[in-house]
Image (cartoon, rainbow over all chains, first blue to last red; front, top):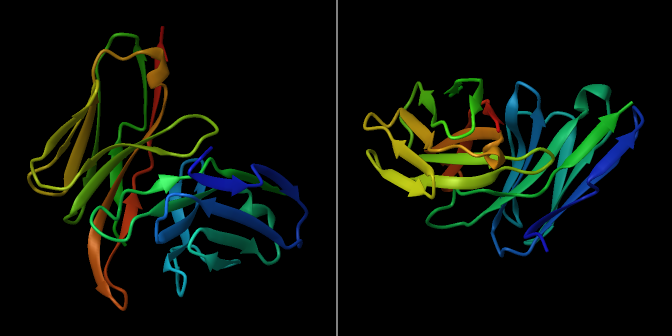
Length: 114
Length: 117
C-alpha cells in the first residue's frame, strides 16, 4: 500500500461545482502539502500544514481551501471549480525535524474542469 | 521570488550514454533535492544534499551540492530505458517566521529525459 494515498485518482467536474480532493498518509509525518502541476510550470505550492492546528497559504492559494482533519489527513477543496484549475494535483508529506524538506508524494489526482 | 533555473529542459539520448543536468539559483540554498517523476506518478526522491560540496551517489546517479550553494548537478551514468521520466531539482532555504525554523521547497521546472534503446 502507498504511504501517501490520494483520492480520487481522476475526476472530471463541471464549472462551478465544489470538489474535494483527499489525502491520507501512513508515514506519521507532521507536515503535509498540496501542490498542483501544470505542463511547463512545474510544481506550485497551494497550501501547507506543519501540524493539525497550522495551515498556511502557498504561492497559488486563491480559489482553494484546505482542511487538516487529523495528522494523517489533509484535504483540498475547490469551492467553485473553473477550467483553469484543470491540473494534476499532488499531496506530499515531510517529517518535522531534521531532514524536514524531504517530501514524499502521493500518486496524484488528475482533475479536469469542463 | 526565488527561482530555480533547471537545464536542459529536455534530453534525448541513446541507451548507455551518460546524462548531466543542473540547477542554479539566484540565492543561497541550504538543501538540494533531486526527484524523478514517472508518467502518471508522483515525484520520487532520488538524492538529498545538505552540505556545500557534498557529493552523493545512489546507484548510477550522482549529485553534488555546489560550493557556492547556488547550484547543484545530477549525473546519470550508463543510461537505461527505465531512466525515462522528468527529473526535478528542488531547494530549500530557512525562513524565519511565525512558525520558526520552517522550510519550503522551491522547484525547478524539470528536465524531461528520453532514452532510445
